Image 1 (cartoon, rainbow over the protein chains, first blue to last red):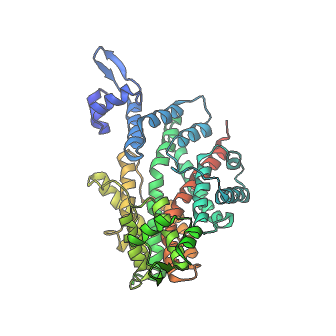
Image 2: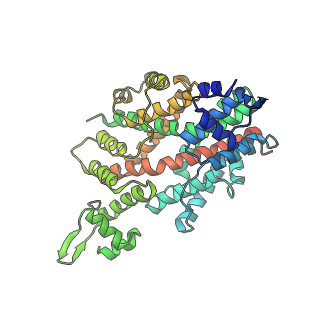
Image 3: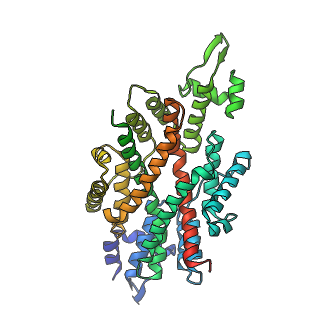
Length: 214
Length: 214
């Protein structure tokens, strides 16, 4: 398809598409003559992914380029490819203060991983942003006087493990490896707000069931 | 306790405490003489809640005041009191575009609530920000060509319902009604980042289990 059709089908303006091409977020089309290039379904898919990251995920262009670099690097195994892409996404803004609460939070997070038998996640604790986010969240609760520990966290972690299995089942249903990696990145950007919304809706429902509307 | 002790025990500077007192985020202490006031455990708890909203939740002072207004209004029933407080928290930034995708997303969200038997949440769809967030998230997925529907959403919604039950069980273990309402607000601010971190950790674990590290 030509640029105009790519724009029409993707809903992205031709000016924006040209900008993405210049920035390397979209691979060049097949040049058919000096002024015209031909684009394929893979350009449409890639535009969809870039829009999700820019418009919904609000990622800066440099981060989008970094994520796409991992997505496109098929020399990597799938875990690393997915992990590298997910790890380029925005993480907790706060630094992990190294006080007693942070140390206690790390101990509880490690105890949690051991109790659940998450031996793979346990191997990654020194480098995983998700692990760091967990420690920051638990340390924040403990700093406020709430003694969240491995035992309180475990049932939530089991629920999130079920969610992760649903995520990967969905990823695996995609027809090609490129689409699987894209679905994983889109999932990280778009499924999280959906889970958060479902969680709040469920709180409304459960609260009304327990206490009524009065 | 005096201001200095309140500051020491809460970790909040006396200047910030005075600012919160002026802004009405903290009720005045009991005046013992012209220059000295006495503060109690309820001030310590309230400071903890304000810090969670300001520092972790990054809410503006006007929003904190609004949330506290609902928290303190014991003329309201607990569902409304919790709901009013949670609804004052930041919600999805995007407006809900009224296109075909948004309409389809609303239909799927309604079908989901019906399929799950969430009749209370169903009554609140016109006013609930959580419902609007869900529609926005599903519409974003559909706009990108992913046909997320009630059937795909249902297993996630069931998991989040279990999480909401854990939340409310935890809230109900608090010793007083004031602490229960505070725990619900803190939960909304602090439990969500924890759930997100656990979800990402679980994705790492599950991904490594399925595909190895190679």
